[in-house]
Length: 306
Image 1 (cartoon, helix red, strand yellow):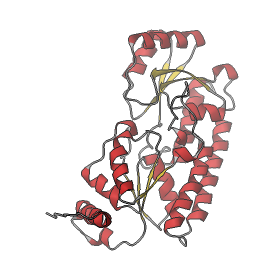
Image 2 (image 1 turned 60 degrees about the horizontal axis):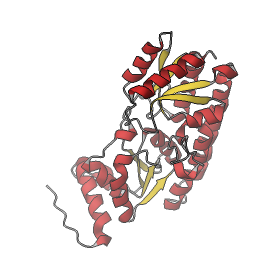
Image 3 (image 1 turned 90 degrees about the horizontal axis):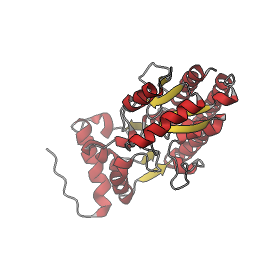
Image 4 (image 1 turned 45 degrees about the horizontal axis):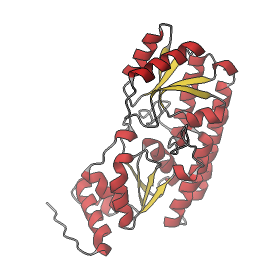
């Protein structure tokens, strides 16, 4: 057991490094002897982006496992220690990782740089204009900009490590994905470019590719809200009125409400899974951000008649 008593603020980060090393492997040399910048990332989506920009020149730890909803995530003691030991923390922000808020505030108070990406890539307000929508990663053009932002933040830690060049490469890959997505969606007629989703997550996709989100199962931008029976009944009528062929749901959230709405419509409405909040398993088409966005476009095109 390691007990650390720290009263002076200037020693807090040193204590966090020792605690994180102990929690990560009993103080073994695999982390203690690694002098590369240590970067902690919240989501799998940003983890892919940061890892590609960092290459072998930084040690990257992603907090959320694959398949976990970031809206509902709570960090462990080990992960809180990692945050305070990091040279840089990269998060989405705009309220996405609500369960990390206290831990991130603590890390920032200890002098850790926390980069919140979503606020830096021209976020859109949710319908109604009260709060900003955090789901910026569903627009590959915005994420191409994010690659450059992340590269610049890493370059401040290690200027000679080539982060800027890799950031440019990752940005080019995302812009190529944008072109591929546009091509996949080209065959969908204007009257079919209407989306019903499990929660308010596809606004950036819709804005980029000329779609309209006409209804959601779970109101608001979080998966944690609960719709009323009146809201679900109204959604059924919207789907019937517009002859919507599919409801798009996240792989990280239960789909029983969407399935119930589809059944109530009484026609052949599909419930189609998309990778929205998390990347897919290693080796799958959705295991990278660019691959995830392209695969989602394929599924949308197939469901809507593209």
